[in-house]
Image (cartoon, rainbow, N blue to C red):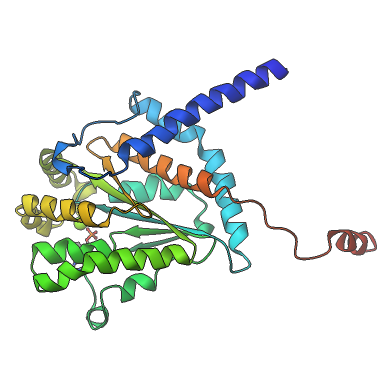
Amino acid sequence: MAKKNAKKSKKKDAKRASDDSISSALRVTPGFQLSDLDPTATPAFSGKKQDAAEAMESTRAEIDDLQERLYAGGRDGDGPAILLVVQGMDTSGKGGIMRHVVGAVDPQGVKLHAFKAPTAEERRHPFLWRIRRELPEPGYIGVFDRSHYEDVLVVRVHDLVPPSTWGRRYGQINTFERSANDKGIHLIKVMLHISADEQKARLAERLERPDKYWKFNPGDIDEREHWDHYQEAYQAVLDKTSTDENPWYVVPADRKWYARLAVQQLLLDKLRELDPGWPDADFDVAEQKRRLAAT
Ligand code: AMP
Ligand code: MG
């Protein structure tokens, strides 16, 4: 029996080591060039689609447990939170991440927000105003489907503000994210990286299938015309805002199954790093047992 357990835990350790390497393989380090990364690659994972699904399933229970601890720890208004920021070109699979990765977590503890073009009210405030309002409270996993980074992506590509204005935003974003860290918010910043060909195929599919028409936006074809400019803007984001405290992870996303596994792994690694314990009782357990027994 002891032997069996030892074997089991050894196997688990081996699995863990290879899991960690997905995160480290995707972490942006100085000199990283987006154009050098093959969007069809599956860094630190040698399996196929079915293996990825199995790998995701095998860590579900652990994620559930860690997430419940995180949530429990926040109930007294204190303790850490996680913020998963998901960026990527149109059709890069942000929706699939929301459904398959975020959707697998207890919805009670998740706060998801999709950032669209700012409303008239939002435009009257500094660009971080609407972002600040959506930061997760202690215990929560906040998820941003698009984010403050749109303010140096679409905004930069389309000259929605003068270059001197968007140029200042990288530094403002770094400061903002550090102040979020000071409040106990741990960021996971993910860019889903697809190829232009894969985007074309995904848009074509949306035009072929009536069940996908709802996802098609004619504006996506206009945006596609600015592909190179967007890649440049993403490169600038990675150069200027991938910091030691709040690094970016670039996930090759032409294979949806890999992207989902990778993001789940990033979330799991962050939860393991936080390793939240169960909060102590804020009542006298023995006394409450006595009271209950007397009923
Ligand atoms: P989707 O994610 O497909 O629902 O589209 C949301 C749209 O909102 C995208 O076209 C984004 O570029 C746009 N968007 C998000 N944030 C901003 C922003 N800060 N300024 C301008 N457009 C934005
Ligand atoms: Mg869209």
